[in-house]
Length: 313
Figure 1 (cartoon, one colour):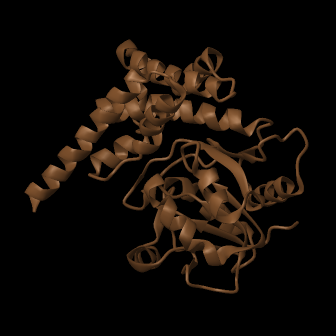
Figure 2: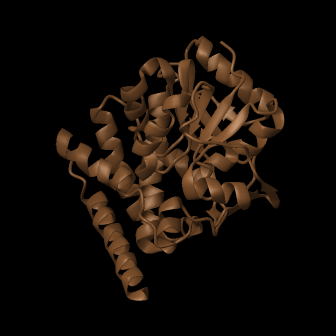
């Protein structure tokens, strides 16, 4: 198995981690961004500016037939996943592999339901990138993409193929031996940090000193851990303690995606984060009071954004 052609859908914060290096190191025409309509026009005319460099990546439309990719990287928001699954249809060939590097714990299942597990690998990102109006400045080596089969004790041919293309392009990666553990650990951190920052309107740096914010963050994480244990995934206090060392190293003013969305008047991924925790808690008999407060509090912010938008018009 050899990966020669790569298609990216979702040229936002996570997509910008991959795009410049894929275009630079793959043969001309072997990397492309999937987009249509107004987004396609914007990317073709204005491009995106990453670390001071303006890029205009090759764009193809979902309607293009007969030119499938060897690797598809899905880096869309949760609310765009259903449409993205439809949009990549013509990009999926007999041997295509798909990495869905979104937040959350259920996107792989949704993609596999459409195309089969033989096309889908588990993946998630560990990097903080802030993008605003097509501009992002970040350390390209300050994080990594994690990917693999559910169990990577022995690397499969398709994992080795993705590994090879990432090494060729200089994309930092890690292959977790237990990908479900890694995926749930990332989800637990996102629920605690992303939701708390969004509700309180604070950047990551506040967690360095404010124990009230940290109480909310850790309590939300513990609810996720109880659910994970019920599902046979061993995460808990050890992982929460591990994250303490990471959270203090994030740039002080960096803000998670949910807070960025609220500040720009957009819908958030709260349903994918605290909403999922509440739903799974109900299914498994786990109380989730902190995540219920986070969920409903962020929904209030969304409603107020909608009200202000109507007033503004």
